[in-house]
Amino acid sequence: MELYEAMTHTPSCRYFTDEAVPKAVLHRVFDHARFASSGGNRQGWRFLVVTDPELRRAVADLHRKQWDPYFLHALEGTVGFQGDGSGAKMEHGTAYAEKRLRRTDDFAQVLHEVPVLVVAYVELATLAVTDQHLDRLSVVGGGSLYTMVQNVMLGCTAEGLGTALTTLLAAEQPDVDALFDVPDGFALGALLAIGWPVPGKQYTKLTRKPVEEVVFMNAWGQGLTT
Image 1 (cartoon, rainbow, N blue to C red):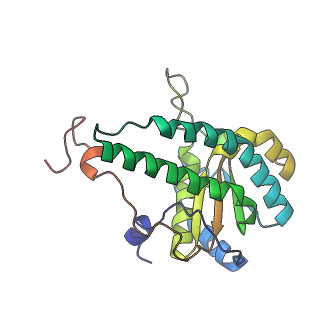
Image 2: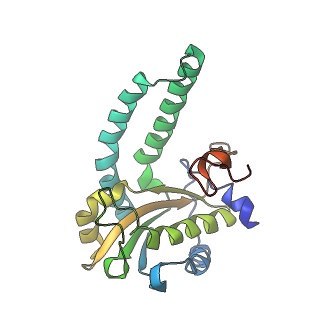
C-alpha cells in the first residue's frame, strides 16, 4: 500500500474477527515501525504483544475500569449537545456523537476477544520533557513514543489489519506493571488493539478538518495557500 493511501485509510477499528494474526506479520510490522524517530535516537519504546487469552482478558478488565465511568459520563453529555442553532444540525450532531460512543463501547466490552493487544511503554530515562515547567499540561514527553505507535498503525494498515489506539489504560499502570513484571523506570503510554477488521463494519472514508483550519504560515490563522 502506498504511504499516502495508508495515512488516509487508518481508521479506529472497533470490530474485529477472531482470526489470529501470524507472528510473522507482527514481526514485519514492528521491523519497519522501529525506524520511527525519537529524541536523541534513544529509542526508549518497549512494546508488550499480548495474545494469551487470560492476559488479554486481564488487560481488557483494567481498561474497562477507566472506560465504563467515562462512557456513562460522556453519554449523558450528548443530551446537552449544542449544534449551530438549527434543529436538524443539533439532531444530527447528537445522534452522531452517541453512535460514536456506542461503537467505542461495543469495542471496549469485547476488547478481550481482539486477537492482539499491544501495551506500549517508554523508558523515562530516555525522555527530555522540555515543557515540564510551563504552566500547562506537558505534551512533549510522548513524542518519543507516539511516532513509533503511529508507524505500527500504518504498518498494520499496509498488512490489511485494523487498529484502535487508546490511552485510558495508562491510569491503571501499577496493575498492568504487576501483570507483566514490568521493571521500574517505564511509563505506559498506549494500548493498541490489532486484528482483522470485520467487513462492512468499519468506517470506509475518513473525514478530517481541512488543511486551512489546522495549518498556518508565518502567522496564526494565516492560511498555507493564501
